[in-house]
Length: 95
Length: 417
Ligand SMILES: Cc1cc2nc3c(=O)[nH]c(=O)nc-3n(C[C@H](O)[C@H](O)[C@H](O)COP(=O)(O)OP(=O)(O)OC[C@H]3O[C@@H](n4cnc5c(N)ncnc54)[C@H](O)[C@@H]3O)c2cc1C
Image (cartoon, rainbow over all chains, first blue to last red; front, side, top):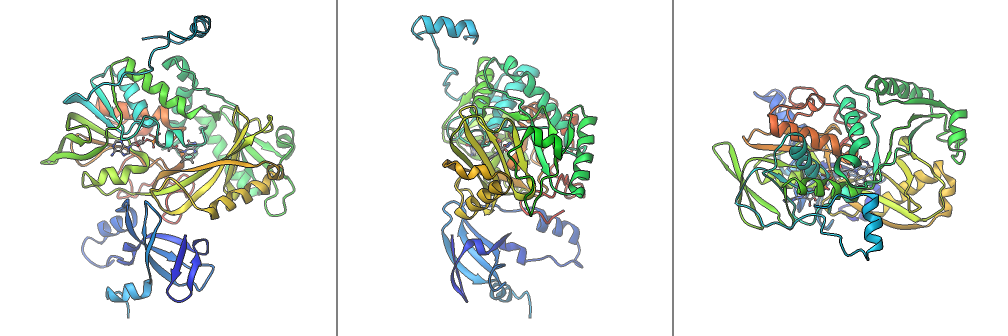
């Protein structure tokens, strides 16, 4: 697979480490009510779809940026690549 | 139905092989069964077989979306072993091993069960000590096991690269009862055994939905029409997430691809199974002479049944590190299978929150060896509505209870333990 890195252009997937479902960006609030149950689901349960899947890829052997790669898990086709930072910010996650 | 025997083969050979009959029936689906099993892989077929033979339940159907054995049961690298450590695991895998030992007589089919021994290599004092502990756990369940030092290992496998600079080989944990089994024959043997006792094996019958009302599951929708059942057990391995989402359930499972490789046929060179865990590589030699080997999962979610080239390179590098002679063999073929990677690397055999719906899955890359015990314990759960003692830890709520079964930091991501 070739990942079209938003900053560096096309890179071999072998340069990356995969962290799985991009929903992991939505870390639950540890101080909220029901945080235990929320963290159980966050850590352990997965949608695991056959088809389009948004996932976190870490460019370990490159610029060490985190990417959100939208990929088809049945065909391995890559549909879009974004910086995880931009995705998280758009969701209001960080400053 | 015909019983196979040496005499039978001789007789058929002398009479032109005209008397062989189909190995199982091709029945039409009935409108209702007592128990419906989703998935005609090793675990689904074994469950049906033990329901019929051990629990006397034969109003049972196995629903398979493709052909019997088209999934991982026919894609794995055929290794069986009972060299686990934890109390939640080891007795289960040892039950499986004892069932393997009597399997061919039990289902009257040649599955080529071959207890040729398995060696797990170690490279450091710490790893040796961990293997000593594992070996003791194995001995306590009667699985046997021996810790070999380098001299003893050299006698058994002189061709290993003992003086490798990065991973010098110091010895191995040896389980003589481990080995290999012809994987397709396991599916066919269980299928035939279940069919002979009245179980309906329904091929090209994909489950497309579950009939759930008021928290009770009463049947399934399939490509061959609706089928009612009092109990439904899903044994869909790599497709677990996909199938259970039809019932509205999310699982602690990710689907990943694992690849396998076979070389051209060679004269006998490797007598047993050798695993090189530190380098993600393992190997055995099939009776046809091909070197059968593999390594780690590709690492990304996949339902594609094919992997990528980086892992091919990684696996071959692992092989060359301990077995330089491998470089002289040519790779003949390779393929991939979809693994149901659970979060702690251990499986599930449990009821779900939906009444009447049962789940068997999360076998990761190690479910072939488990096939007999998994079938037996799933049948036990379906028949008695309580877990078999050796499978009692395989519950779906174990992460919620803080009781994962962390055998060796395996699973979809090795950082959740
Ligand atoms: C390359 C590779 C090497 C492996 N090596 C080993 C090894 O050496 N030792 C070991 O112990 N294990 C090994 N494994 C793991 C082992 O093969 C699996 O854990 C085990 O086979 C899974 O159980 P099963 O046989 O029931 O799965 P499968 O044979 O995959 O059965 C599941 C069945 O469900 C069917 N299905 C899916 N969805 C539906 C639906 N909607 N409706 C109806 N049917 C459906 C599928 O078609 C499939 O036939 C390996 C796996 C792979 C891929």
